Image 1 (spheres, rainbow, N blue to C red):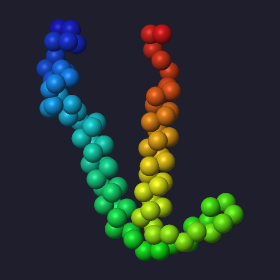
Image 2 (cartoon, helix red, strand yellow; image 1 turned 90 degrees about the vertical axis):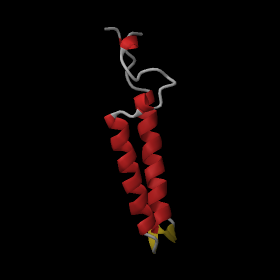
Image 3 (cartoon, rainbow, N blue to C red; image 1 turned 135 degrees about the horizontal axis):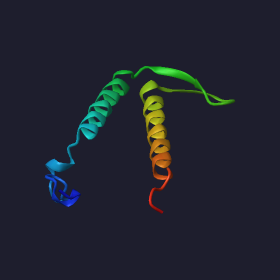
Image 4 (tube, rainbow, N blue to C red; image 1 turned 30 degrees about the vertical axis):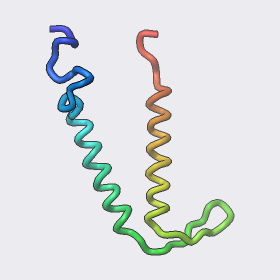
Amino acid sequence: MSPKDTVGTKRGDRFGALTPGRIGMAVVAVLLLVFIFENTREVKIRLLIPEVTMPLYLALLATALLGGLCGWYVARRGPRRGR
């Protein structure tokens, strides 16, 4: 059986996109958002030299977004097979 013959791999098949890895990442993302928006108090954060006061959820959200961007960049620039 070739990879083209497997069930749920067509681009138009919406349910084929629900792999266990994607479901796991969606669960982690939802838990991350719940954690972020449950922590709303003001905190002092030191950014190298200046000290900034901001809601904790904004600091957590910014950190999560930066981590996601770094992960996306590293995954995209990883070793290329077959080239």
